Image 1 (cartoon, rainbow, N blue to C red):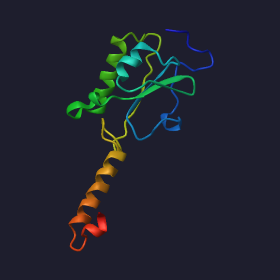
Image 2: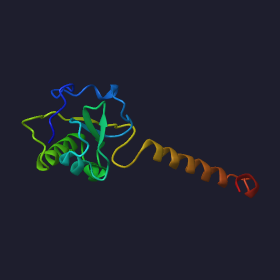
Image 3: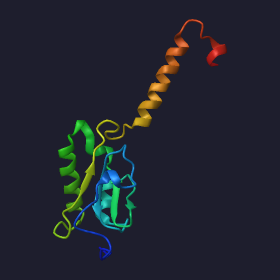
Length: 138
């Protein structure tokens, strides 16, 4: 692992709510600047590892961590274990942050996906209404 840039605070992660990352997803973040970090690449797969403010790596927590309705604490433990198993030096940095968006997204289900389903449901209901023949909806 490359030397952490001296301008980056490696003893803390800023408030995730103030970082320019998506706030409608479940994500994890660690102090590191190299997107090729093997532990993050392995634990984030198939999602890409990204850098925020040149000092922290983040990724969307893969949906597989939420299989069978796994609770957030179990996801934290599983992702932490994955980072350790894949070579993250926990004596160098034990800091990992998570954002769980309980209202908007769990695993692969997103607000956008639900809105698309709601729109399709509205369209289907409108097609079933009396008087909404082919001229109205094609």
